[in-house]
Amino acid sequence: MSTSFGSNSQGEHHLFTPQEATKMLPDVSEKMKALIAKKKLLDAQKDEVERYNLIGLRTDASTEKAKRLDFLAEDMMKTIRELEDLGLTVRDIDFGLVDFPAERYGEKVFLCWRFGEADVGYWHRPEEGFGGRRTLKNQLVSP
Image (cartoon, rainbow, N blue to C red; front, side):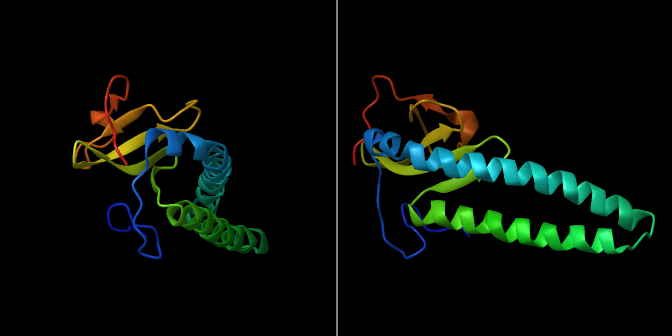
C-alpha cells in the first residue's frame, strides 16, 4: 500500500508543514486509536484461531472467528487507506507511528508523530526511521 514520497493513493503530492500536520491530529488520532484497538483484537483472535488449528479442532466457532479475522483485517486496511489518502504513511500500528512527508532545507524528510503525542514535534530522514527522529524545536521544516 506504499505510495511515492508525498503522494496519496491518487498520486497527488503534498508536503506538510508541522502546523498543517498538527492541525490534522484530531482526525488522525481518532483513526489511529481505532486502528490500534482493531489490531489488538485481531492479534488476540488470531492467536485463538491458531490454537484451534494447531490441535486440529475445526468447529463452527473457530470458522466464525476466522471470518471475523478477515473482516477485521479488511476494516483495518480501509482505515489505513483513509490515512494514506490524506497523504500520510502508517509506519507501525502497535506503536501508533505515522509519518507526514515534508521538506527540510530542500531535503525530503518525514514529520514523525506517535499516537498520544499532543503535536507533531519530530522529524527524520526516510532512511533513518523512528530511531533517527529529532525534535523540531529550532529546526526549520518548509512546505
